[in-house]
Length: 89
Image 1 (cartoon, rainbow, N blue to C red):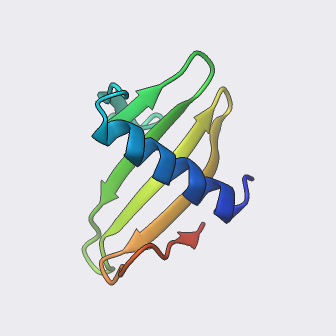
Image 2 (tube, rainbow, N blue to C red; image 1 turned 180 degrees about the vertical axis):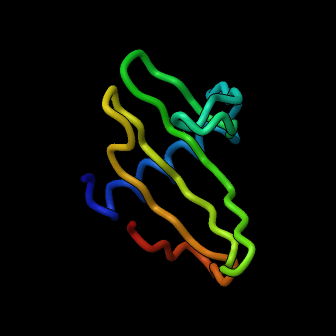
């Protein structure tokens, strides 16, 4: 797993590049679920942001780094998210 601080740094740099229109976001499949979420794809990895809505639990937004074998690292927050604090999962 990638340390939380490194994942946050990756997320913030990606946000900066997105604001400058330097990143091409596309909809991509989430694992084997059939769902789709915005992603930036690289030759051997991708970064994906997904909103999950649960019936009996708070909504969750996740920032995931995917490698060839699946999710390599993940940051997530629930609907009570405030500021830039994420919980590693």
